[in-house]
Length: 369
Image 1 (spheres, rainbow, N blue to C red):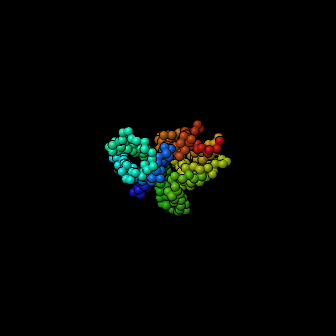
Image 2 (tube, one colour):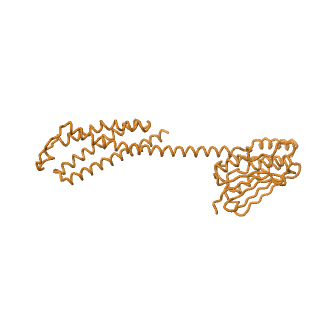
Image 3 (spheres, rainbow, N blue to C red):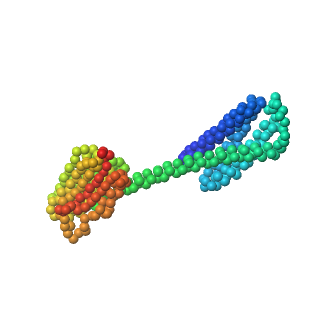
């Protein structure tokens, strides 16, 4: 954080110094052009004195800049007031140096060879200083307003970048949280089934289940929660999950996969199908007494990839809790992840099938119209 503050401070100083030099160079050019047009005498003598005034002006204006930086974190109104107040003494010091250099120090050189046009009513020192101070004052106020405007714009851009960064961090955190909402009941049920297999002495199936479980969690916990995977990889992962569940329901669970042309290589959020398959196991296979087929199908049409997860479990769930509706936690997880990833371009529906079972359908844009 300290490094970032130092970088912003150096950037602000470079901005201030650049604007100061630009303003005073314009001042020197305008006054030199004015002197040339009016054919003032001793042009070379005026030039070096004008350059001296310019250098002193740059230094004094930079001092004013340092004063303004002291109130850099104050509201804009206070900074404007500080600019108007700080410009007054700065303008007076400039006027003193200007008066000394042009009216006191070797003044004869400036008017050497000039025609004697006479002075009807010469200005007093106080009047000259007042006139110089007022002109320099408005010059400094103009620079100060430009500097404040540039500084304020820079702060606004920094705030926008910070807000955008915070939004990205919040979005990533949301995506990670949704990604890691894997149903813990799956692990508990799997361990119970594994215990039963060990107690029955079915070591071969127990070993297969342990390997599948290890692969499942290795893939789910080591993969980047913000990264996409191909649909083929996602389906392979779900197949691994279903292989584990098949040990628990060897006579009831059947699977069917049907990936249409061009869908296998399409990117999808990792584990986006996991809650849907869990839902089919929990509310379909585990309650049924007959064989249940869980199907995963995908097809591309009109620039949209439609992925369907369905089961053909009996329509009557018996006395147990009803099938999870679209507002349930697992299905809501899928809907929220799709919105976070694709916005309104994605779609999600979940409903019972007319002849028994349940289906959930995802619509993911492919940007192909």
